[in-house]
Length: 143
Image (cartoon, rainbow, N blue to C red; front, top):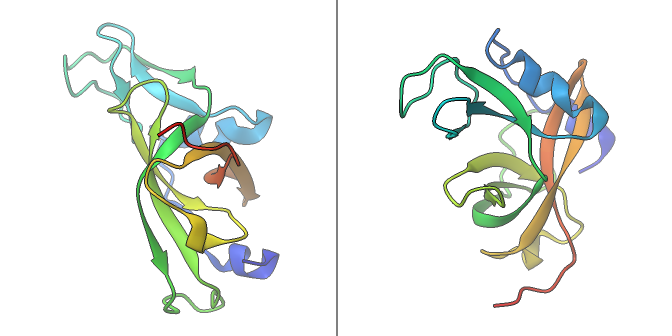
C-alpha cells in the first residue's frame, strides 16, 4: 500500500479516554490501559476496569510484540483511493494471551501471513495520531 493509499484510510474517532493511546506511539512505544487494582489489561482503552469496576486505570508500556491470532485480507475496494489488497489482523500481545488488539498488517507479501506468525508493533503518523500497525518479525515459528 503506497503513502497516498495509507492517507486515504479512515482515522479512528478519538475520545478523552483513548487520546493517550493514539498519541503514545510518538516515541515508538505502545501503551495499553491497565487496571491499577487487579492488573487486568484493558483494550480498547476504557476509564473503568471491566473485571473489578475500579476507576484506577492507567497506561502502561508493552513490549509491542505478539502473534497473529486471526486475520483477513481484503482484495475488494471498499474505500475510495485504496485499491491495493490490505490485511487486518487480531494480534495476541506477549504480555497476556487474553490481550488482543486489531491492527492493519504492513507486509510485502500478504500471502505469507499465517496464524501464529510473530509480529511487532510499528506506528504510522496520521493527523497528529500514531496508528499502531503490525509487521512480521521475520522470525521463524518454533511450532
